[in-house]
Image 1 (cartoon, rainbow, N blue to C red):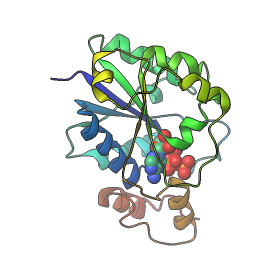
Image 2 (image 1 turned 90 degrees about the vertical axis):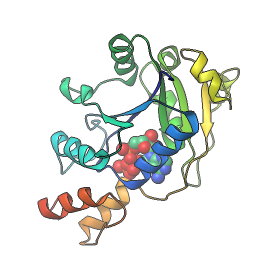
Image 3 (image 1 turned 180 degrees about the horizontal axis):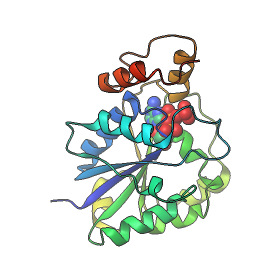
Image 4 (image 1 turned 45 degrees about the horizontal axis):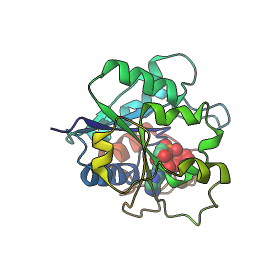
Length: 212
Ligand code: ATP
């Protein structure tokens, strides 16, 4: 059996169907043994969240119940303050020394990679899998284009064989769903049914999350 595990970090404020569907596309395309969803502390530059970390975590657990390949990993929330992804990957490597990891990110997050702490070290810890998002898209920063040379591959078997350092662009279902749009609909009193899994929708409705 493969030992390649996917890592999908995000604010998940809230988790929605696009997160789940594109993650499953990657799991199936890459033959991943599992995928760990890792909610992060809300970064300081974002708007103050209306839901706390425990609630985001609870919604994640509701969302993945019944899908044995998806695991919720709360390691970043158990640490105080924001965690850098590169440090999170290091802890995963030490907890699971016999596994290889690939870090999933949407194309928007990937374009912003040069703004991440010690971003070039990420590829020492894991492979990167970039999922195209349905957005008009800005151009890729020049330094990222240069960094990509020699790392890019379209062959998943390379990611299974090598322990880290490769970048693979994976096509996934194009779903124009975002947490920003979901929060805006709720703030305006709208319904978000069918944009999130039913148990998440139910929880948001009952707890009146994100409502004005
Ligand atoms: P927000 O709108 O609050 O920024 P988001 O919907 O982008 O939230 P995040 O939790 O910030 O969700 O994203 C986690 C990861 O999921 C990021 O790498 C992001 O690019 C990716 N992602 C989110 N929505 C999609 C989508 N519709 N298609 C592909 N990737 C997505």
